[in-house]
Length: 108
Image 1 (cartoon, rainbow, N blue to C red):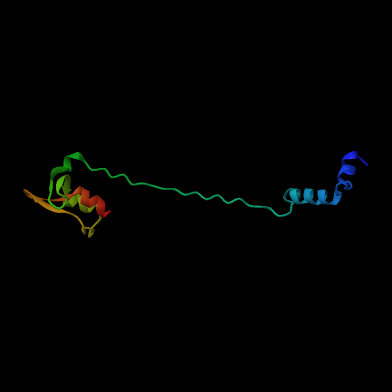
Image 2: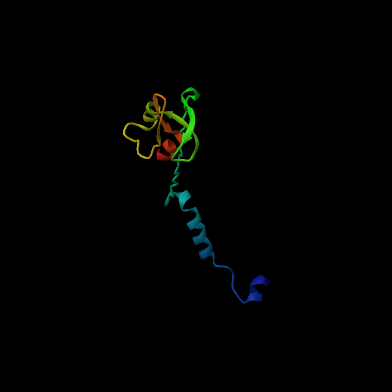
């Protein structure tokens, strides 16, 4: 018996326990339980809003209390959809009805 086992007062290592550990580790390779990987993909998207500069008017919004960009009501309805006018700041300038772009974007 080697000296390392005599010093500790133990016998040779158990072959059975080593063999069982080996079998547990190689079970998937031998056709046992197969662990399946699951991949989850999350995609985030953002919307880009492009408004032609020619249709934007600069003006004072009384509700915001600041100078803002304003767009015609027809463009605002096209962007947001019909019937979504709640929360918009409306302003009449000359012969056009304008919507505060800041309030329009907040409502989306």
